[in-house]
Amino acid sequence: MRKILLVCGLLVTSGYAFSQAAAPIKPDVKAGEAKVKAVCSSCHGMDGNGPNPQYPSLKGQKAEYLKKQISDFKSGKRTNDNGIMKAMTATLTDQDIANIAEYFSTKK
Ligand code: HEC
Image (cartoon, rainbow, N blue to C red; front, side, top):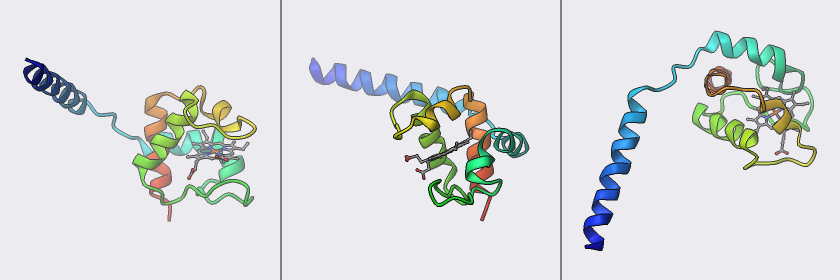
């Protein structure tokens, strides 16, 4: 009986993953650039290669990686000492995050 429940659970979760994948967020690099200019560039630079070694370089990172880090800062799962990145990501929507991640991933 337990095995049957497990199989049902798997089917339901994979179905869920599939329906999620059916409507992915389409990243908009131009919108990402505008957001970076307004919010992130003072520390990370427009090309994700900030002037100050204190701020990590974001250029050319994989979009998936950046999305995860930005989302984790927003949710509080990832923290940094002064909480600066939580403040920076607080108002970003999932669409903003996808846009920004795509934008930085295109920088070399
Ligand atoms: C006031 C300066 C400042 C601003 C503005 C800022 N950041 Fe950061 N960011 C930092 C610091 C400092 C860290 C390092 C945090 C740590 O110690 O983990 C960081 C880390 C990151 C990381 C993690 C990089 C890695 O490889 O682990 C990402 C991604 C990031 N920032 C994206 C952004 C985005 C996107 C914006 C604009 C919405 C932004 N940051 C605005 C200072 C800033």
